[in-house]
Length: 260
Image 1 (tube, helix red, strand yellow):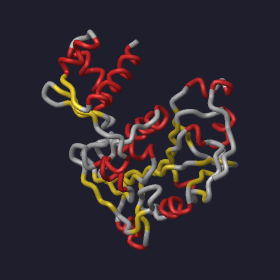
Image 2 (cartoon, rainbow, N blue to C red):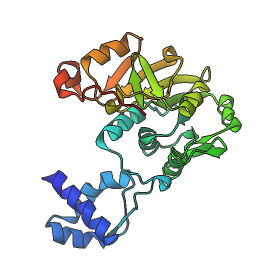
Image 3 (cartoon, rainbow, N blue to C red):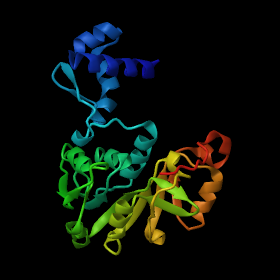
Image 4 (cartoon, rainbow, N blue to C red):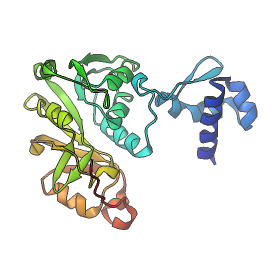
């Protein structure tokens, strides 16, 4: 019931673009406190902005950091962000939806990225210092590449989150440029993590992430038990959300081949 109300709230705000909390309270027959509580996760995801007595809809613009994430990407981002402690000072995050979600959840760290939309989202967070590296923009991923990307070697990172968008036969996969970028993060990272959406297990991409033994763990949202065992044999620890994934393959998104 509450989830249905939240969906309707967002739809109503999108239609109005700007609307008072009092009006939403009257239309949905709940208190303004309940409206604010329902809107809080939307504000954290930068879908809306709550002001004094009103709420404003934020357009779903990837380059403005307001891309709406699906629940799986959001869950992985939440897990990854929870791994960042107060002692961590410098973090690497690349491009991709999960990376964007991580940036939305960080505070009071230095963030280094080659992603325009990750950097834009990070600049809206409290106490984040952002370094953007690279020179040539890829129009599809909105990530920067080029020789100046090698500047990442000059940093010492407490943590780095590398997003994979494919996995097949013990190989975590990404586009060629993303995999090349990830290879620069070798020897200057204290803890490296792979983040991957569960639906991408079984997908095929053009390049593989190298140096898997340098990674501390894989963060994902859904995983078949057979794949869990395969990944752990690399060996890589797997951090995942669904407890049922370990016991019931039929309840987990099945592996599927995808040619790109």
